[in-house]
Image (tube, rainbow, N blue to C red; front, side):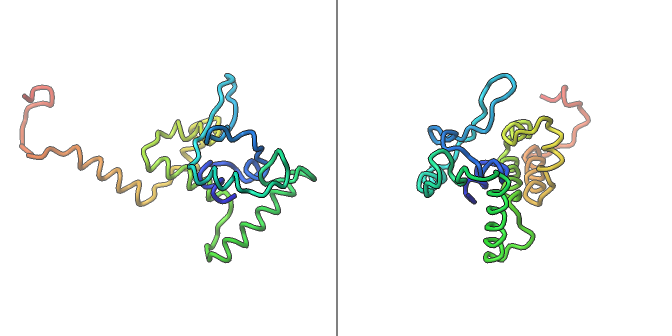
Length: 166
């Protein structure tokens, strides 16, 4: 469950009720766009292998028995994750942090925010900007490195405009 949450960007409810048929050729079908185009996210091979080894509580689902309401299995998984975070001494953690981590890691790797927005299933890129593009130290360092990369190797003072330079 933790690997799926970390590498898929799924919400806890979507992960807890994930149907086995949504994993195809190492990719997770996230959703169908209004245009009918499917959106997939590739999963690392070790995540797919871990899912394949998940005990079969139901032939159609990875983590749900199919009995009862989905909100019940979500509550069960939230309790289990809280206990895991306690054991790991991770304070203030919750399942949504995996989704945040997925988004921020993509952004830090240079994936454009509009593409991250599609993967998260946001209907508007502004939601992604507000929720998942925090000014973390690593992002600031990337910005600084990008600016410094633009500096010339041999600076010269010139009154010529940028167009007039040889």
